[in-house]
Image (cartoon, rainbow, N blue to C red; front, side):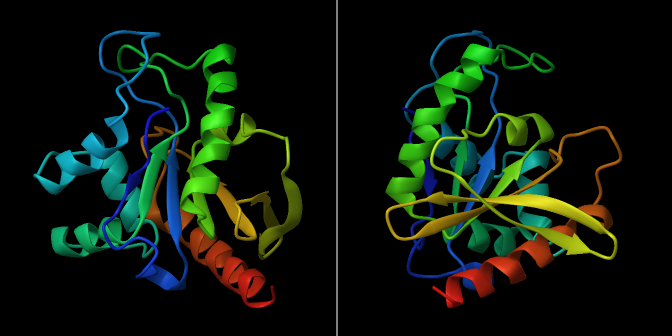
Length: 200
């Protein structure tokens, strides 16, 4: 299993009032199908801390506010949050997509990640990831609604109640991804998740 990145203040400081796990889809490292190293997720965020450019990680943090955040602000967010990719194997190169076995192999590590981290809110990045989240143990939550539109959300047991899971398009998507489009949904989902946890 590829270990999730866990910020040094995760669990003691809650950005936006919740413990947050950002769930990415997959990674590429030139060896399609090979297992990623156990510290791969830690290396992704560690590289960002050292100044590596990663538009997906940058957008995944900024989308919670909807505006560009400074490097110290983004670093503070990740130091109090967690990150993991769902797919455990190397996709090889840019543009190569996970196959059905890749998605299947990610189910158990995802469930173990929830038990280990016990997040209150999970932001899943990508339509295909959302479609391949495991159905075992999950419960439906009433959808998030903005105006006449609504989007689904799930509840997964996490050994400390439930993780509230909400999905958006992948930040690297070329289908018109933008903060004005997705931040209102993320903020609405956070509001509903906070209410959900307060009532338990």
